[in-house]
Image 1: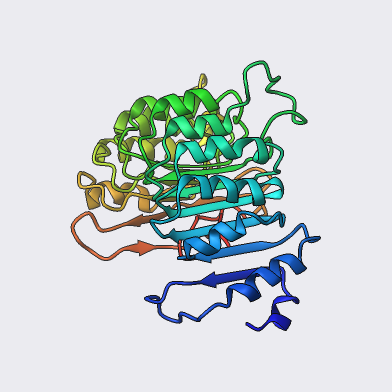
Image 2: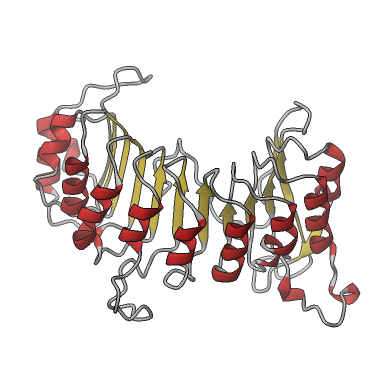
Length: 354
């Protein structure tokens, strides 16, 4: 785009990767001119792919506020100090931050950027493929300092945070959940993909994040126990992804099916209809080697009570499944049938997702 076009938009995506289809040469000067010209705007959305280290260093010296920042595939030459400067420069007004394959991003960068980002109205934080980020850095970024009154929205950093995703980063353990749980019980979407997480993490999630609408524990070490006794208790959960979980078997799927099949009239008098995941509308069990087609079939015709207050008004909702046939068959992905019931599932190819 030329400079005149840049001045007319509040959202830009720049791709500096010469190997990508549709690659276009981007003039760094025009890019910087765009940032300078929009310095008074508070709704800028910027996506950068494979950005040269030299340009990122230049950007880190600018103070243009951004509402959304996405950095993809940063080169190896971008170090921790550059990331810290970038987050400090752009982070004061951020609502959505997405960092994918940022190999130079480390815990130290998050710690250094925290003072500048603490006042940001951050609603969505998505980290993927950032191997230098561990639960230590995330805890330092997200957990309020000792002595800070956690329930005060005026003082609580990231009090607006609703979506948190940590995918294929450094080691993330249950200790992170334990530390952030008292401060982020209002989370609505949680994605944690780490082989360090097991049933203990699932129980912590069920006990601490009762407002979850979307949960992804893909590739973790959770088992049937987690499905039956922990995740099944998240009564507001709409979307669940346990793909690639080797500990999930037919037994867990059938236990989940029983919870979904419980109609109000048939429930035990001691069990309330609001104590199990009756709102579940979408389930992904792809790449679960010990889940058979027979077990999946117990869910394929599952009907659950309509969500109270939904646009459907009543009746039943149909559970949508995504599986790989559990034997190499085709993937079946059905769209939600009830508008507004299922939250948006992040697509790495979609620059609008956070």
